[in-house]
Image: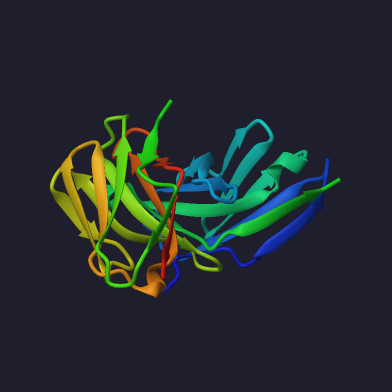
Length: 112
Length: 113
């Protein structure tokens, strides 16, 4: 039973445009949602998080939106840059030892 | 800077061998985790620990065990390596109550032949 889902395996966006990555979840007990970026042969790097009591969090070019009624969150990257090309994972935290449950990832390619 | 260090970047082991993957963190984090990453499956939690000598099973614990004798060190043990355990293994650590993010090591690419 997959509690965190990323339904788009890949996304291609032109440099300078907006990238929107989506994530759905099923467990109402998640208290934080996070986005990670991963390059090949490296560990994931934390990007941005949002508490379940908020609906938006912004950090530079990255904004995360949370729609609790739809159990949906999205990551917006504006403007997209070639260095943003990576796999992006959505994750959700539950209380037990702050355990993170990850989605399957979306590969973003930013083209020139 | 938070540092999570995994003992090896690449490992090749034979079927049936006992394999140890070591992870050390320097941020005094209470929690430590072992994940594996496989194409199309994302990151799946194998085991985690919220305190010294405490451990809990994650989503895919079969064929693995863990040890946490000191707060900064978390070891993953493959009791008898099999080819379906060929994967990227990722260690992470986090605080329980401060910030929500977990910090990851660089990963160990394990190949079982």
